[in-house]
Image (cartoon, rainbow, N blue to C red; front, side, top):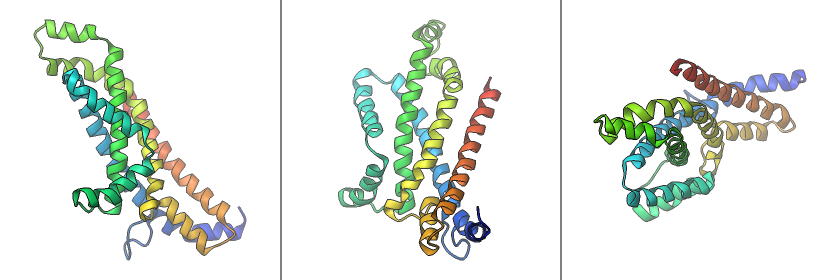
Length: 227
């Protein structure tokens, strides 16, 4: 990278990392991380909760819920962001902020994937352990919590980390509702400094790589500890 480009990227790095904060609004990589953290947390809690509920729910109730989750997995993330931001105020009279819109949309889609992964994990373990726990006097909820859930969580941790990485990268779609996350901040910097697009977006790629590599490392360490 030439010295001029290197100095340019170094000078714009604070804006890429945090926007104009604290004098102005939080933006850039910091906002990307904040949205990703909230979306991943919400998706994990809701996804695991949904999978456990579906395991215990009657089939007549579980089927339409599974169909709804399949629908969420089928639609593009950007479409769900649009629906949440533009249609929800019209249909329900609820105004949702831009950042909240992105977090809710990503959490919903992430939860649908996590619930599907958990359900597949329950099925892979087999019904034999579940039936044996019931024969020992456990309730279905106790069998799920004590027998099925621990090995399923261990098995799905790598997949869970992959979902977190995907949600982190999907925050780049927040530009459609005007959120200045990392990719949008890079576009703004590029607009003010024409001719350095390759260097600017290379720096952004490095930031994304560091964040996603850290998430994968967390997943690997968690897996080692759970084993």
